[in-house]
Length: 291
Length: 291
Image (cartoon, rainbow over all chains, first blue to last red; front, side):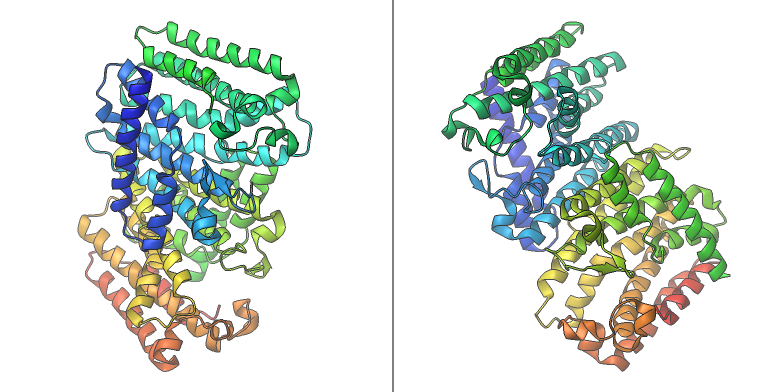
């Protein structure tokens, strides 16, 4: 069921992202750079979480596509900027040349700026959604992505390089860098689905746990994954002295931590008067994925 | 009158910008980098235009401070990113080291990202403003600043370097790069002041003309300004083969064009049932400024 949902909804999201770029009127080079990174693949986990939330609430997925795309655009801008020479200096992402390798640094910076700005335009222009709901979405997304959220996480991550961090410090970084935007994807699904405050809070808590689980699994795969599947050399974290769950806890305890966060995530769903079967499957998928 | 207004309102804006940064919870280095560029001076022309619009409409300036700051934050982010080595590679801005010279490139990129994202958060959280008005502000600002507006202008400007542009092409670039956000400052003042559609349209037209006038004056000052006042060497545009109004039209015709846009701007005010004395003075200030 989850594979089918992933496959189908990824196609919807990717088609919608394409049509969003077609509405823009900037120079072709800018549109090409934006389109390149939006179509560069990836798991589309944030849109999928938003849509799976709507499905669990028995609401039409149609309600969520534009917001799902806006969040994916924010995620994409953050990758484009993270890959820049001044930041992580990555030449490849998901096996393809990074944006600045293809379009140059200046255009990569501007493509990121454009993606971020336009994501807010999309939400402000949603059709058939009340202004009050749009404002709620904009508040939560701009907070999660901003200088007290994702941007703060990126800075803390950068400044943690070469230092030995405590588990607490590492979790703080991942909460902000990954967890905030993942959590907000679920919250946005819940807001669009007119869920109660309690449901929104439980789904957000689910999101924070699977955000950490996602990151721990990334770290574990870097130690014992298959090079071909994960698209980068195994052991590259250790080589670059990166702080990871296995480096702080050891591999076995990191895996226990992964199990803990998956279970904790699921426990937040069990308190709710809905069937979130898809979200449970996504939690399992995150735990068991090989790439 | 205008000098007094400038002086007083600049202080209000700068104090408000400071208190906005104090609400953020990211790493200190990020907050310092954001604060540095927000407090680096400048004419604050966008906030001043927004506030002068409110005054002309006989509305309390208090209504406009947060939106004025949000627009100034967007303007500031665009300067921080424009100054980066991959873009204009500027070491100085207004006589001070540019953001990346002080904080490094990575933090400058992230400070810009944080400023942009948080500007939308500020507008989404305005107090005592209806959701419908907030959405109208967010739509206009995200459009003017986005990949069909300011970001497009920046790309077109970059791609025009080393080419000989027509006057039309140059105006298109400046409309997007400078005019859109200037025009939107007036529009936001009008929206906050509950002005009619007609008033909003006339004020927006005023903004577009003074946006071009502002740019032409910049170009003229680069030819015949006083090095000390303008804070950069005279003749630096010609040296870098930049397309400017004087390079395309000659200095005298460029000055005539400046006069034309100032007059055209003012004519849009004369159609309206308000006294926009301050805006007229700002138009004259733009024409006569020496820095």
